[in-house]
Length: 106
Image (cartoon, rainbow, N blue to C red; front, side, top):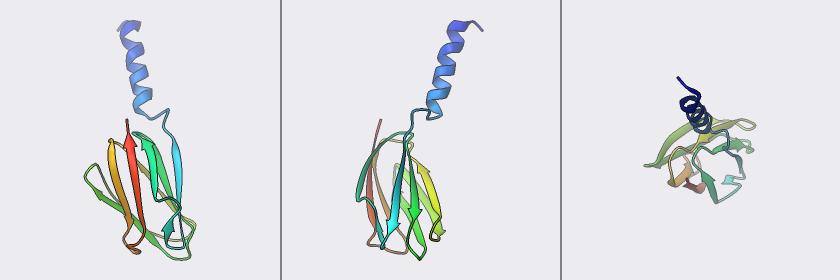
């Protein structure tokens, strides 16, 4: 393989790994998310950090990003990487009033 073919492959590989991805933290405190809306890009990650004295179970049933982080206690966190553009509605299975909307762009 010549260098003209290898270099684009290497660039694609590192780009697809999310080298330029951002990391966001959304805390859960007082039975609420620290933000009600958040804008991210494809490849970005959100860390959901539980600051409450009781468990949370963060999930999304949105078509573009289905996930269920399971129940986890104070001081622990779970992370989601956003893979497609669109709107992701996020809730807590234990505290239904907790809602977060994430707008994912390219």
